Length: 265
Image (tube, rainbow, N blue to C red; front, top):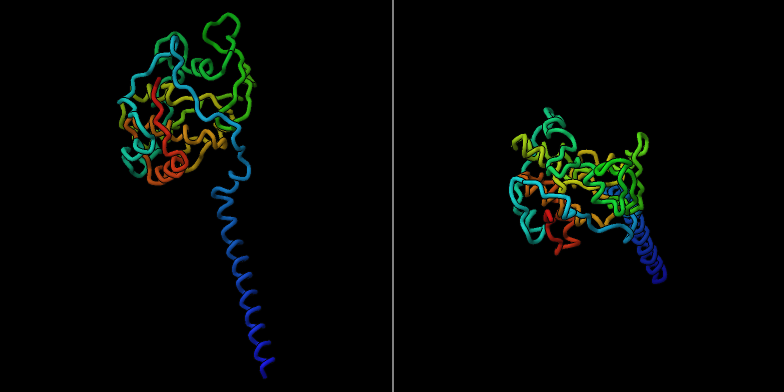
């Protein structure tokens, strides 16, 4: 009888272990797909430690700061984020790019349009097109969103490979307060070097009008600067953040609590 009781207890123990293994397997089957589609796909594919961690704002001597609604606050980006209003997004049904004025307007009046100013700023050693002192013809740089080396060559089929991204997308700005700005203020927002970076064309298309809750640069080295720059732009133009956007920004800044705001200098 003693041997039989031991056999019974051993069988029960093995049964409990088997059920525990089965439960763990079922939990993993449920959790892993959620993790993969929420974050894991990026963690598995993103380069580590290879891309830029910041991008310039002004190139002193030939670029001039643009008058924003208010000054960007100094200090930590996390503190600046806490100071931003949090609201649900406004409707975008009446959004039109023309609400932000002429594309690539020479708002700082340095004689060159904004797109070429940003290309010249972001592409070290960029060369001008023949016969021009403004139009950039070619240049190579380490692109911040992907971390890859990218070459720009002016041409009908190649110019799109390097695009100028609005860090706070104009569609996002429209649904988080830009509707309340004046036409001049919106034009400044669209042409402010603080809100503009030369980037990989496909990455820019992937981002679209997304905020930080829906899209972040694949180059994780750049994310702290990217989010801090979005916060700085929103602070400068009196825009708000949505609850989901704020949560996403806080998650990024948790990895870099000393990240400062990005000042227009």
